[in-house]
Amino acid sequence: MKKIMIAVDNPKESQGILSLFQNLLWSPEDIILLHVEQLEGNALMTAMLSDAEMSTLKESLKGTEHKDRLDMKAGKVLSYYRKELENGGLVNIKTVIREGHPSEEILKVAEEEKVDLIIVGCSGKSRLHRMVTGCTARDVEKNAKVPVLISKGNGCGEHAHLWNGREAYAVQ
Amino acid sequence: MKKVLIAVDDTKGSKAVLSVFQNLVRPPEEVILVHVEKLEGRSLMIDMLGEAELSTLKESLKGTDYKEELDRKAEKVLNYYKKELENGGLIRIKTVIREGVPADEILRVAEEEEVDLIITGSNGKKGMLRLITGCVSKDVEKSSKVPVLVGKSDAHEKVFDVKEVIAAV
Image (cartoon, rainbow over all chains, first blue to last red; front, side, top):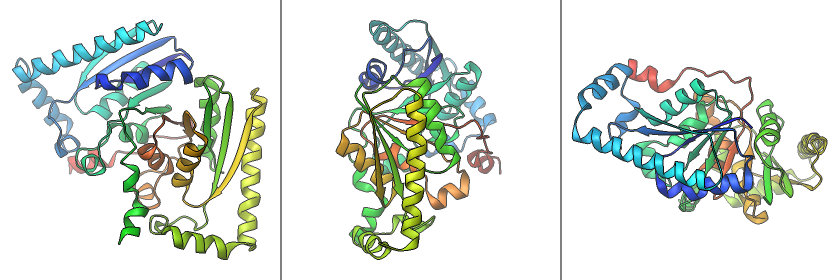
């Protein structure tokens, strides 16, 4: 096992991710901790911005309070995970901050760093919420060339199950 | 590490579970190898069958050539993967054959057996085909309560991203 990338967004998921290394996975030689700053908020927009528009957005956000806040959050999340992982005995951790569309940036970094596995958390969004704002884990899983592990925790999957397509039909 | 469920079928994409399992995962105490017989073939139907209809379908297929063919296939697939895993040094392997909607059955077995991890392959369906026939790994990932590891076989090339094309238009 060589290189693993962990895409982190939310400190709540750390327990799930740590227990993966304790129980399921071989300890990797290198870990890339990635956080993607989502510039445009939770919106349908994310899928509709082209590269040019995205770079305009990046440009215009530079130095604003919004961007400062994003940077602060990124720093906080990454240092939190780094500490947690180091406490768990894992070393050689590199942190990376990117801006843009989460799943695209995750895939980009995965290719640049030639990782052997991508770990993403599950957001625990409800079906409707997910339909509207998209699901990073799914987009990554769909397009990645390397294996993807979707870690679970924070109750996700539990109510998604109720909304299985087949059951929705059965209700009619 | 306790129990890992590995879902397999006869597609090439499924073979990715082996490399993933051997390279990334610590040896578990027990492996549950699951193959789900898809009674209704590849179709949109899969989401539209209720429990009752599905059990009627199961009933009416009993003893037919088609069902025997499915059983034979299931045996073959499971034996292949069992042997591969045994060659890798695993001893406790339990094989399970189910009938029905793959994602549902995989999740059901995962809950019954209280597994700690689900490993699936990825069939590499893209775009329209995936939209129409569904994707087992996606459905499993969506509704599972335990971590899901999706293997990738090297053969998959990234097909163009529909999203970007739409944006460009």
